[in-house]
Image 1 (cartoon, rainbow, N blue to C red):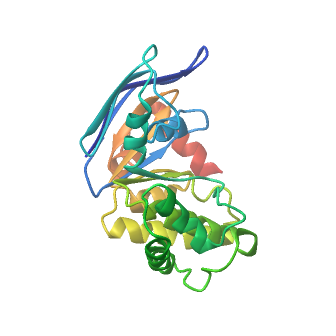
Image 2 (image 1 turned 135 degrees about the horizontal axis):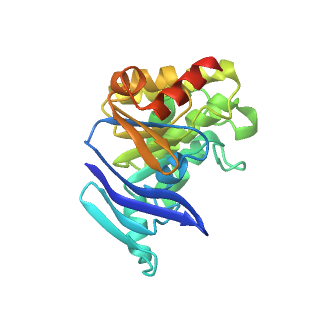
Length: 248
């Protein structure tokens, strides 16, 4: 289970997260939507401590960390929590000098201390899982954006994390490449993978989420099933955001 209690995060005088709390059961999918600047990506980055919260607590699969602005986290605690989460970024972040297989294997070798043979064998399985068994020897510049993002998903899965984190996984893709990435994420959801996804794809959010939250100005405005949030919310700010999205 994942639980966040009273999470705060500021950048200078700008308060980005204002006491966010939520729970996510193992095997469920949480999707976060909201306008630009609402705090959704900052919240996601807090789950693997790419951003260190200023206050509150975070628990993933039994590992709980508490935060205070004047207390520095121990490096071992940061690494322990990061091992429980795998991050998929907007911009792929692949190593350009490594093949697709090398990208998936590298973390297993350097972090998990697997042998190269074992890491590459697992990498081949994961690349096949995301539909890239024929691209193991290809370098990032030889792959489309959608293929690069699927390599990034395989790389995130290679560490066997408790939760997969997706930060707008299709925002950098041409429209015709979006569907191939969403298909892989839907497949992972069907398998019972625990995932937290920030997205602007409303149809996808409604389809894949067990729980949907809509953030604005650093707080959760609405939380529930996709139907409850997208169709039944009576919050005027929620309705305003959703009507604007529909009008685009």
